[in-house]
Every structure is written in structure tokens, then in C-alpha cells.
Image (cartoon, rainbow, N blue to C red):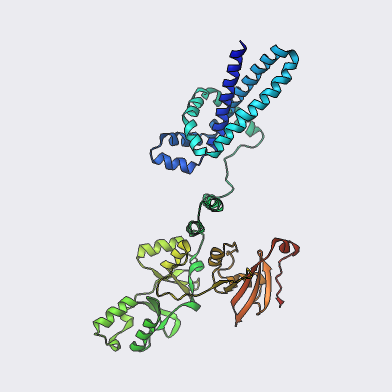
Length: 434
């Protein structure tokens, strides 16, 4: 009867390997992939999704089946070896079964499953569902005992993830990029899309110091020349002082007015063709502003602070650039705000947004306290540094190259080696002249 005993031992090892592979496959399967396959009509994927929804019972069935198979195989093998060799057969059985269980019932099936968890999960879904149905009453008792023990030790409670769903999705995108399955441009686009809810209009707007505005009181001929000289199609008009914006002139409306006046620009009154200005608060989330643009069917808004003063302007293109990167056309003026140097440093205009620099150089400078690179340096230095001063923080050395009045216009940024960073006990916030 030894051959029957060996057959049962081999069968138990196969069953144990099945449960081991199922455990690795089902716990490592992608729920997003299963949901996608389920929507495409894959019934096995739907079964996997249901099993994952009953995670506690699934784990109980896997461990219970695996342990029953391993214990049964070991007990039967011990009986066979003791019949052959007497009491010392226990040692032989222990050594042989340890090798067989580790290789054929644990490592080999789990290695196969971990290399293709989704495919393996689809293959074992229906057998595992049948196993859970057969072991249902016993699993119910096990669950009750486990929950009572958890309450006894104060471990009961709902599962709380460390990261939010958005952060987990961002981590998945970064992991795919790190593994070479996602291009940097695609990663940046998805990252920009996820960032929309965290950004405010003030983070993406064009500051008032860089706005193109025209005095509405200019003679019509001169005003038309000013409009034709700019590369923009929507231009704010002001009267008496730049802060008093009375409307937004669209280049197409101006061309229609010129045609209606038979080319006589002196007969044009821009105040009658300008659109009323639309003011939005600077603290509005970018995602809400995007919805507002779509709702109003307009692409241009003026940004005001809490006191109602104009801080800048925001366009639909500014928001889209946060997702897809810089959008340029044949009329855009190219401004080289980030210039990489042969020595590994980068010369950056002070007005360059931190987010744009991070995206261009794949850095991770913080942008919570400041929007531009110059703002970050001023925030960290707690002062407006002079030309030639340098600072080290966040793993980079910043050196001020140019300063105009109270504005930092150019900086040189160099990554600091980790060894050099460790040697500095604290970031240098006081400027050091070179």
C-alpha cells in the first residue's frame, strides 16, 4: 500500500501548490485590470473581483486549504517512513517533506504565479470560488474566532489606507515610469491632471507685471497699431489707470469693426466692441475654473485678490498647459526660461514657475509656499538676496545671477551631491558672497 500512500502525498503536494499559487495570484492581481476585463465581458475577471471583495474569507480559504494539504502530506509521509526505518524515519520524513514542500508546494508555484498574477488569477478563480463554497461553514467559524481575538487585543477597525486614492494612482504612474513602461511625457500629463484639484488659479495665472494691456483712451489709429503689434488675440483695456480694466478686446471683433468702417480706423470706438471683463478669485481651484470656462464658453478671465485688486489673468490654455505641457503656436514668443549648462547646472529666469522647472528637469522642488523659483529663494532666505549670494536647500544650491530692484531675474541652480549635503548640518539660509 506504499504506492497508494505516495500517490496521496503527491496529490496533497499538488493541492498545496495550487493554494500557494492562488494566494500569490489573487493577492497580486490588479483590481483595475479585473474591472476592465469584467466590463469587456470576461466572466472569470468578474469572479476574481468578487473574490477580492471577500478578502477575509478568501485568505481564510487559501490558508485553510494549504495547511490541510501540507499537514496531511507530512503526516502520511511520516507514517510511511516510520514503517520503513522505525523511529528514525521521523527525521527522514521531516527532511524529505521539507524539501518537497518548500520547492514544489511553495517556491515553484508562487514564482510561476508572481510572474503572471493576472493570468493566474483568472485561471484559479472558479476553483477557488468552489473551494470557498465547500469550506463555507468552517470559514464562517474561523472568521468569528478571528474577529473576537482582534477585539480582545484592540485591533478591530476598518482598513485605513496611508495614501489617498489620488496619491496611490500617482504612485502607480511613477512606478510604471520607473519600470520603463511609461514615457516621461505621459507621466507628466497624468500627473498634471491629478494636480488640478490641488492647484489654485494663482498658481497658473500670468502675473500682472507680465500682462499685455492697452489704454482705451489712445487714438483709434494708435490703438489698432498696438493690437496688431502684439501676438495675443484677447487684450485687456484700461482707462485712467492700469488697475481700472473696463473690458477685453478680441482681435476678431476689432477686424470686424475695421471692415464695417471700410478701413477707416478713426471711426472705431473700442469701448463699444470690447467684451465685459470677467473677474475670478485667485484662490479658486483650477479644476473649478476649468469647469467655469466650459460653462461660460470663454477662454479668458482676470484674476483678483481678496481686496478686489487685479493680480493677473488666466486663460484656458494656461490650464491645459498644466496637463499637456507648454503649448506653442507660430505667433508665440519663445522665452528661454530654463537653460541647461555643460557643468550640470541650470540657469533659470526668476519668473519661471517651480512646477514648470520640476517638469522640465524632473526635479521635486516644493511649490507649496511659492509659485516661482525667485519666490522659493526669497521664502527660504527670508530676505531679498543680492547678486552673487548663494543658498543651499532642498538638495540644490541656488546662486543669484541678476537682480533688478526688488526682483530676482536670474539664478543658477546646481544639484548638490548627497555626500556634500550630509556634511552640511543645516541648510545655509544666510547669503554668502562669491
